[in-house]
Length: 271
Picture (tube, rainbow, N blue to C red):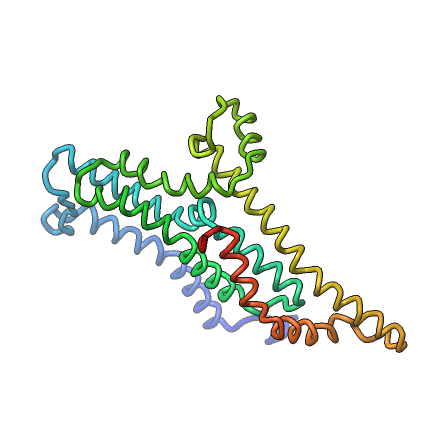
């Protein structure tokens, strides 16, 4: 004998069956109505056809589209180009090493460091950018030369800049790995060998400058740690106590003035 609670009332069971049947049939009904609407109506009742007019069907339209795609590609690669052919790499690495030496992992923030490195890059690279504009972009805008010649003229000032700061040993390394013919000067080297040689040369110089920056702050850390050990305060982290001394030391010696001036002069801008 079953209790009343073990068997659902007839009305509730009928309602559950109808709800389940409706939930199964509703998608099929909607799909059927959609197919009838798509296949049953004439072409005039459907949406208007989409068309795009690029002008005439001449070859110039295709050339413009290709130029637009190339321009979008160059713009998407602009950050990488900034890293490859300018002094941005050395500046940003040195500033990052300075922040690590001070012991402030997030101060100044990354946005501030990148912005400072970017504007210093514009300051240092201004003569090169002006030459590239006057030799390459300006004649191209005035339609005196084509895109290929504009690129060759515009990249020439950057090749001069990279050749001046790329170590001969680094350039020779990539020339030998690519099995290229020796060149009389670094400016005549192809870009696929000159750009990586310039980048690793910049990283080497950035590490050299970073070492010189690190030394005085390491001495401060060692002095603070020795004082704490002599006082028996070994549980107190030396980094916590040395950070204020490193900050005030950097301020008293006018560290930003010295660092920025040294970085700019290392590229020979003020010569």
